[in-house]
Length: 96
Image 1 (spheres, rainbow, N blue to C red):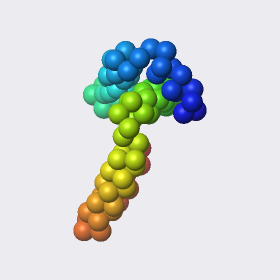
Image 2: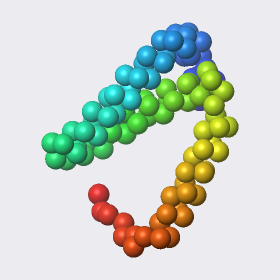
Image 3: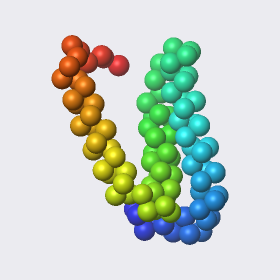
Image 4: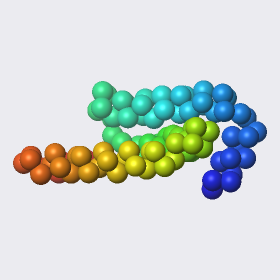
């Protein structure tokens, strides 16, 4: 998958892919806002499609700026921090 994403990135260039990344993030935000604001039922297929678009574009952005290792470390730090916070809460998972 990484090679194919690199091929796409090489074809369109980092500037065009950055603009596409911004568009895909906005589309995901819109799909999630429809749920939150308008109380529409989740169209899980649409949300999954938008997440896939954002993940592909995020991967290309990380490739362009050599962020993959930094992102991995940052994600783990954030997960550990949240787990620490949860130990101090009366945590009950919400059903979606």
